[in-house]
Image (cartoon, rainbow, N blue to C red; front, side, top):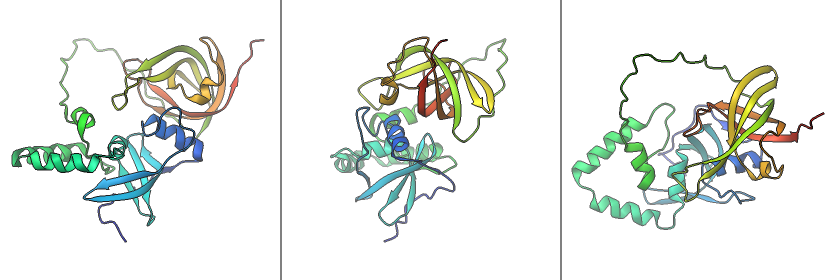
Length: 251
């Protein structure tokens, strides 16, 4: 059976292994930090309840899922997370019955504004929807703006890096009851090819916790690095799925 509703990704990144898939699902809030393996997910919309697997991503806000018939579909991770609730279908039915014609028209207009290229199924409900719908207030322009540092051309593939632990902190997770644990690094640089990054951050994953890191510790690892600012912190780059971790021993 062919699903007519699917939004096929033009290009996307597949997970290299189960470890990368697990770490990314944890980052999206689809799995708990204690999860040791992935689980079955379901796509619930239009009266359907279809089993699916998360096979990759277009970007960090666009997951790619695969149905049993091998069709691919782009979807917002928080929308997929809401679909996993046991009463999700009932909530949709109740919301549809309560909605007036004006509310439906307004929702459709807002949904159209949210969908950008690449296309992604990002119709949200509940708290996630309120965050998407909230209008952005324009801040008054400052008379004298600081010059922005030139944006680095980051490599797309995994690279070897070195970094020093600067701080352990937490940031709010609007889709979870618990805050996310993160590490902020200083003196971050790519060793091959050589490139200075400055400051970066990563999730404080179970893999990193095994190293029992302390402030001032220097580590080497392989990872993908992307331009993604840490919430409420002036840290512009994120370290994704670090592997082959090693502490650098002081001589």
